[in-house]
Length: 286
View 1 (cartoon, rainbow, N blue to C red):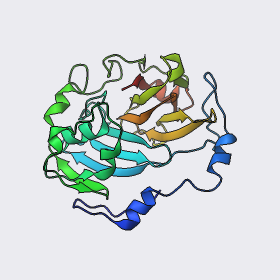
View 2 (view 1 turned 120 degrees about the horizontal axis):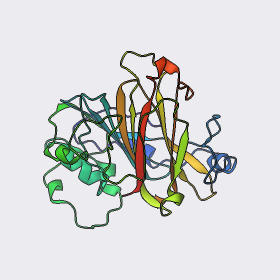
View 3 (view 1 turned 90 degrees about the vertical axis):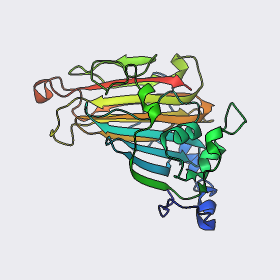
View 4 (view 1 turned 180 degrees about the horizontal axis):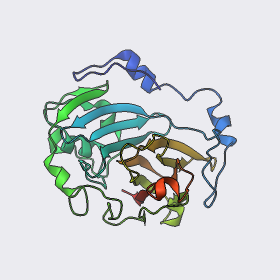
């Protein structure tokens, strides 16, 4: 990953642009060929999985405590949107599914905030630039902003415009939705089982383990895509702390995709007297 200096002003750094265009490291294709998976196989968790690193395009925090990160993976040319919050105290601010990452950014941010240049490069179904783009500056460096007002579009985020819970659905029409129960076994979901290739993987996890529990009682959340070699490449790997939730959208290009879930208590139903549990939910598509 290329380190970049955060800024919120127009900046077209030659070094930054060169780093974004840099080719994959030597041996990348050979590494991909060593890892293979097919639908039904467990995701590779032994450290041999090929990874598709993300560069941060924007790191935003809203007054309700929700953190939103827009990202881009140079190797795959996929984009990412991560939303993170705490328990039942706040809710995501960006509605999912997305029309595009650019539209999501424009709807979530004030007009005085610059737009990450790479968001303009994501393929769109509509070739006409969105009207909200007019008059806004563009930057090649990551945008960092704090204490942003919650956008009006946030009222469309969940099925009832409410904070996430461990027992109610988050997405309108999920392909899978596993409510929190003690002893939930690890599980992987493949887009091949839900219509084939998909533009995005959309995944939600809420770790219902009580606040203040040890940090190793996490809910693990991963997203992969299948490359031309037939191997699943890991694009996202997160450990959701106790009493936290996160929503991750990853993609842009039509690909075979996979979401995988596990936990830090090895699915032990007796962990915490049955309080160690998490909700997982998601869908493939736009």
